[in-house]
Image 1 (cartoon, rainbow, N blue to C red):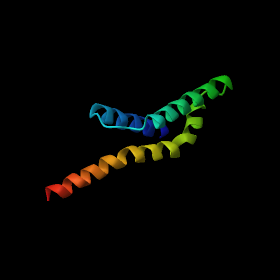
Image 2 (cartoon, rainbow, N blue to C red):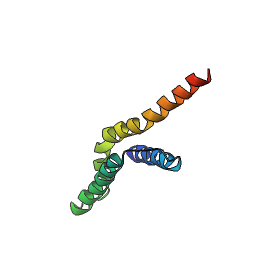
Image 3 (cartoon, helix red, strand yellow):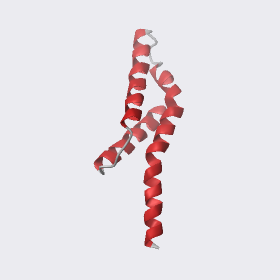
Image 4 (cartoon, helix red, strand yellow):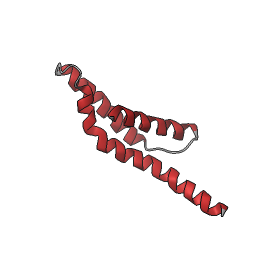
Length: 85
């Protein structure tokens, strides 16, 4: 579940980069560091396949970052629809 939401976050950022829209680079950096940290802890502690379980803890933060990235897209779309009426 978390990998799918992480992929959704990355796809939203790719969409924003492709359309030359701004996005929060600090949030991307934080998510990247959390991803690396989950893998690092899993490898160092010799926990085997538990990496996904540790990364799952970051799910609320990633959902919040997704909401921050998608909100301007939704607002601009609503404004365009209102202008067309």
